Image 1 (cartoon, helix red, strand yellow):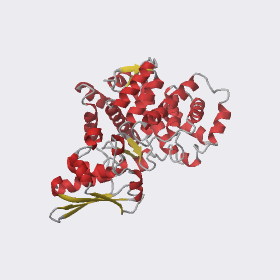
Image 2 (cartoon, rainbow, N blue to C red):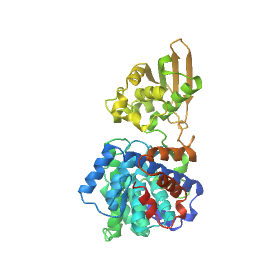
Image 3 (cartoon, rainbow, N blue to C red):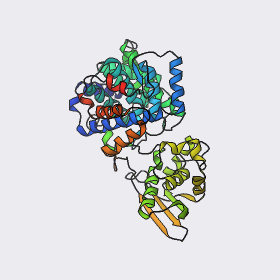
Image 4 (cartoon, one colour):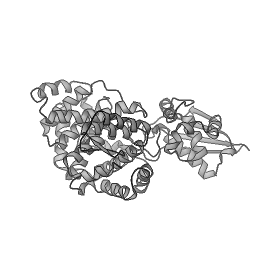
Length: 436
């Protein structure tokens, strides 16, 4: 059986019988959905998110689908575009541990938009999200089009298309998304990539549902399946071994490049264990792997986006102010005199070996003015599968991201809805609550 057909039948099968999904997989995906909603609501406060919403309004995108945090509705295609961009906006979402792919940014906006528009039960929305994210992380090793294809498969299943219909949607999405660039970075690039994957997948499924491509679906599917996108290894163990839980997905505790998160935890650890104050520090040495260093290329950030991938800034700001928050990565914050002074004391070295068991280990050494030296090493950052966020930590993140956008009763309702999504008969109200 060709790969694209295999993916289509997998999607149709699990959305037709959501009760058969492993509890570990559905539990992981409930957390991913709650985390995505938190990231999108935080992104809604950013000027680029406001500008993109204004663009959609001016384009005349009327409809029944909520734009998260913006208090307006639009078409499912435009909702997917904006909400996918908001999820990625601040580097605060999640990623596949092995490939770094941000599957949720493509799939979550798609299933929420169509679920709201058609009043679909929560159990079916969750199972479509599971299918889409599993496909995305499997395809992401060989394709930058994985998000659009995964979103199309999930959307087609929600539209109650059979395996042939899902396959047609997949082939359309593969054509639309051909050559799409990766969307692993945050910032304005996310507007053209994170949201575009969700938009293209949603559009492909709606086109397939309208009958477009039916007459040529077999030939298109054969052609799509010969693409490097559809590697045979992508479907090995599909439906039996779940990449969503092994090697798993990391939920980001900090709104910055995840390659830096072990450094953050190590810096917090050494400061808290030894009660280190910034004015006591003579120098701060950070040891990471060569791969970590390559993913954090900026030496002196010139704007807030670069600061998210500047190891010297992140380590200095963490030592000065503690756990990184959203406002750490703002124009005033990168000009903070105390942080700038601390950056001059930071040295970074690719001194640690890489290992599949520890993707981004970090070791921090602080030397005080009196010559005292403290070390702290972290092999797995909080939020990774080895150190997962517990329910309280994830809900605290949701509260932090939403406290200025949603009223208190809506925050509680949203958390409860995602925690119990399988019991919701119609997610229209659940999605609407996220509008603010």
